[in-house]
Image (tube, rainbow, N blue to C red; front, side, top):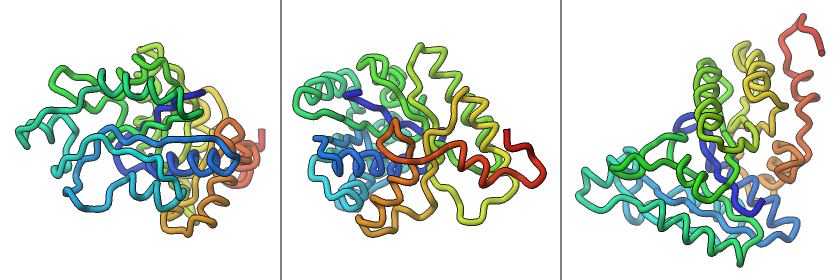
Length: 244
């Protein structure tokens, strides 16, 4: 793949950390990679944003934030309330397409979930993926409620004819409860494939070296890591469940 869109089932599910993990692994194997945040919201002009986390964790300098809004709203709403122009996804698609001649991998992290509005015409990160013909990686949380959020996201992708690159749990807790452990099998059922990864919680607080190792063990081979979905499922299945 040359472009990968990273979206979430909601906000705060770990999209930035998963994006950074993919970028770190790609850079470590010598791949020229760029990371783009088309729209950052809820951050003031000179404050630390998601792209700064990616820069810190990966050491990459080819990281780009193309628009920023102080209000913690969807990009379209934040632009409207700030009386400024919203992001132009058609322009962004053209810029990203040009970047594929320079970078082997371009990672694009969305804002919020798949269908969050970027402009008043209703353009979403799903539309950006469609325009680019890019696959979409879905990041979810592991806790109660994730099955409905993930199912809706996957259904929206399928309805639009978009390729799902897989489902990654963005922050797997050190001591998962029954809902988390039970959800592993159901998330795989929803996506009709093994999990593409599960990043340990608080990985974003690690040093870059420790983060690279967490990325390696937390992402599957399709994303550059060594995560074994079957082993993960066996390790965390509720007591008494079949290992099948």
